[in-house]
Each structure stands twice: as structure tokens, then as C-alpha cells.
Image (spheres, rainbow, N blue to C red):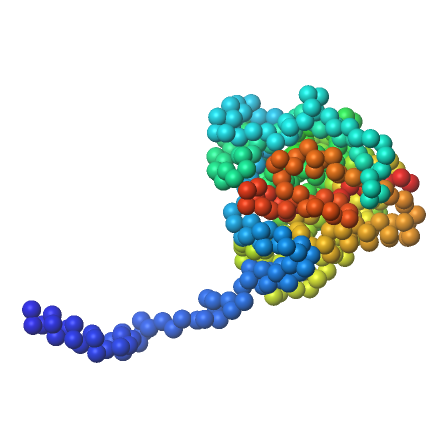
Length: 384
């Protein structure tokens, strides 16, 4: 007993136990290697606070809280799978947000222009695109997708707002479609669900991302829909597409690389706000404008182009569209018309929170009760 008391007294007097540790077992913490003084997520938040507080004004605090909270997902139903997941989703309280439309799945608009000069669009939504979401305020997570007897997965989990660009593209029977920046594949899969596309070309400049895209398609789509006659997968530089195929496609989706605001705030890995990627981040608006211009050149006269990002940044959204439209007109003699997406926002205002009074395009804002997005989209129609 006396020995134990003596040991306790000794330990109290010894403030630094390293003196009792053999030198060979001592480890000095390497601060430079283990702790980043300014992690990319913190740099991203500082940048967004400085930029978006002025851009969004009084609604930025609520958007900021939503961006820093867990996002909501949607379950894109895979109509190629024979797995009966529909009843399971409905029993959990989910509903298809796209089904909130008329019985024929159509939304027609008057032929007069909007007050901001944008031409309205008559949208005919494909009945084959179904995306299930939980009600507003419900943060329940979806169960993982399960394969059917053929190995095809039942549904694809993605931000439900990411389906909106595919709906806005308004793919019709027999269309030739280009997805210029396709990886990781969620929007490509949504386009294939329409089962209306005559030929689909999917491209991504990154070879590794293209390989991931192939895996997604093989997990969800039967082989007979992935033949060379119906689908082409490439890894070309998208900015050069105007030199590869001009005046070819009825519909072009240009979902460009961006600052990916939500990822930049939540993940340090592969974060564009890393100090070694400053140059890449600063070049983003120019890259985006070049990609959009290439998509415009790839579309045939009368065809439509849908530009989209997952950032709130005005310099990556409206400014890029304005620059690409100007260059197309001045340097390539291509006339374009902005198509209003107001009908789409009116149809889905019960599911998403849309930014008010954008001068160009539409944007889904993250909100705690409906934490989807951000997604920006702007639709152009090529006249000449």
C-alpha cells in the first residue's frame, strides 16, 4: 500500500513523462505534415463569405447554413431494372417530384416573350424520368440500390436538383444528343431513361472519370442500349469539340467543371481551393466559356444547348453565358436565343428553392428544409 502511494506522489511530481520513455520510443509530432494551417475547406468558406454575401445579400446566411449541413438526395428510378423498388420507396414516404404536372406530362406556355426578353419554352417532360425525394424537412437517408436478376441496379442516388438540367433539355424522340462533360454519369443516366434518344455521345476530358462513367452505365443500362450504334463514349478535350463535330446535335448538355461549392466546403480531398490549384481555379471561367462555345458549335441550327454548374458564383454562371453568346455572335456568326426556364421553376417550386430575380437562367439554392443544390442552368436555342 505504501509503495502505491509513493508511486502516485512520484507521478505527480513528474510533469513530463517523456523523461521516463526510452529515447528510441519517443515520437515528435510533425505539425507541418499532420495539421494544415489553412485547410481548403476553410479557404473556400472565406472566399464564399466574401463573394456570396454581396451577391446574395440577406439570403446568404441561410444558404450558408444549408451548404454546411448534410445535403438531401434523390433516387433516380432505373427503368431498365426489373427490381420492384417503386413500392419500397413509396412505403418509406417518398414521392416522385417530377409527377407534379398535368396528366400528359406537359407544360405549355404562351408564345410571347417574358418581361426580361427571354423566350418561353414549351416543355414536354418524359414520363420515363422519375426521381423520388423525401418531403421537405425530412432528412431520412435512402437505402443503397439493389441489383435485379440481371445485375442492374434499381436506382441511382444523386442530388435531385441535378435532374432539372436533363428535364430542361427537353429531349424528344429521335434526337441526337451530346453530353460534353458527362462524368460521373448521373445526368447521362437520366437522359438514357427517356428512351427517346436516337444517338448519345458522352464525353469527359478525364480518362479516369470516363472509366468511372463506363462502370456506372454498365451497372444500370442493358448492353443492347450501349452498342456503338446508340452510344459513343470519348475522352476528348471538350473545348475542341467545335473542330471535331459541328452542326450535328439536336440537344447539347454542357455541365461544366466548377468550384463545386458544396464539396469545397465539406471535403479537403480533391478540393479546388487547395493552394496548389489556385491557377486552375482562376482559369475556370475561361474554361467554362470555351466549353459552352464548343457546345454551341456542336449543336445544329434549331438545336438547343443547356449550360449548367453546381456553384452559386455569378462569374461562373451568368457571366460565362454572356461571354460565350458574345463570342459566338462576333467570331462565328452564330445567333442565339435565351430560352426561359420559368415554366420549370413554377412546376417544381414545391420541391426546390429557386433564386429570385436572376437576370439570366435559373438557380436552385440550398435551403435547410429543401437542401438540394446549388444548381445553375441556362438554356440557349441556336438560330443560325
